[in-house]
Picture: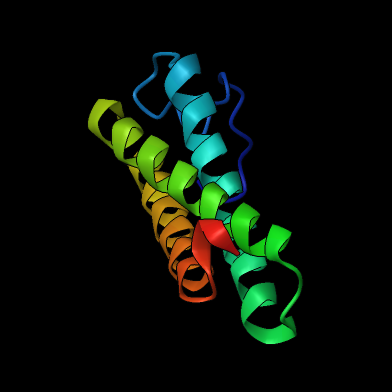
Amino acid sequence: MAGTLHSGPRSRILNSDGRPHPVENALTIFTLVVGLISFVLGLIVRNAHPGAAVHIIATGAGLLALLVGLYVQMVSSNRNQRVLIVAGIIAGFVGLAIGVSRGGFIG
């Protein structure tokens, strides 16, 4: 019936299979957050031309998001985790690519 409240236990977004996965969930959120940080820093590097430290941080964060994301993708246990992981991997890759195109690890 529409409009009824569900009084059962609330399922977690990343635990859609009903079992807890604390390590995979933490690595999933880590990949997404670091990937988004790398993406934003990559856009700053592309548009504002800041110092070499921002290039290095964008490149390092992108590489870290990419490598951790690829590992977590292999051990992930449900679809909801994989969606966030792929979003983090793509954002990290874009940040990595922009950082490398502007100097990479050498600034």
